Amino acid sequence: MEIQKELIRWYRENRRLLIFRENKNPYSIWVSEIMAQQTRIETMLGYYERWMVKYPTIEALARAPLASVLKSWEGLGYYNRARKLHEGANYVMEVHQGVLPQTLIELEKIPGIGRYTAGAIGSIAFNLRAPAVDGNVLRVISRLIRSSEDISSLQTQKMIYNLVYDLMEEGNPSDFTQGLMELGATLCSPTTPTCGDCPIQSKCQAFQMNEVQLYPYKKPKKKPISIQCTPLLLIDEEKGIVLAEEWEDGLMKGYSRLPECRSLLMKEQSVYLATKKHVFSHRIWNMDIYYQSPYLGNLEENWQWVSFDDLAKVSIVSAHRKIIDEYRGKLFERVL
Ligand code: SF4
Image (cartoon, rainbow, N blue to C red; front, side):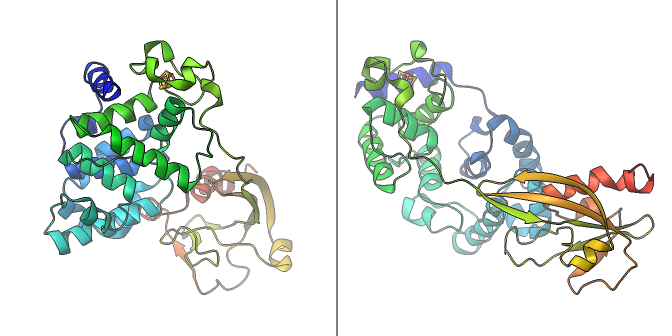
């Protein structure tokens, strides 16, 4: 198992010093892996440090109100991850007395922990032979074997999972998993891999054939859906701002938004401020932003005043918080 030995040796000598790798505490690994999904390491580090101060144990996280957990997550995006971490912590308290179980089957029963996260916790913390195959690992392996299968297909991912499992046959699953992750996160980057420094270069078929840029093969993605929306600023210097809670699209539950300027009449009574775009993973909000005096009509059922003092305590979708921050001062200073 040359590949495994080379990778582990390289990892031990070259690994980055990351705070969540300082110990093999399974809860730390759980939190860091969830935070690192869809988020750059440099971005999540500050969040991770603050999180571990505020919720140092599974028990502390489980006991915290969901609203404050969501607040701690604000700005990281993909908010369902925070909701699931909280739900998962409560599950571990109830079923495992606050201690993460040491088998893949039990780990995968925890809300928010799927095959990848169970593999990461299982192999890194408990030294189990449990592959953790994320996008980085898929890229490394697809280059290693010159796989021309679509990397987004489940079948390809299963094939790579099995291959990584075979590679974990002997030795140290913890360091092997981290080595593979580290190689994908550093040298074997998507666009500019540093193959000259790679510990498994001699085994890498894509490198040998001078075809690294062709892998992994991906079918073209669908374009994100574009959605037109009309956030409305109902704002008063004394009372604060009107926010709404329930939404027909069911997205980002638990987060408040600006009300929507729905009707033609409302638009006629309002002042158009600007058009802005906010890009999510699968959709784009094209926002025509309006301002209206809050005293023109009655507030709708799910609309409510939030004082400026309380604004920081409320979880608000980040696209709308940016609008509030930008226009609040301008509206009062009449600079628009
Ligand atoms: Fe990635 Fe290059 Fe190493 Fe192959 S040789 S695994 S492409 S860094």
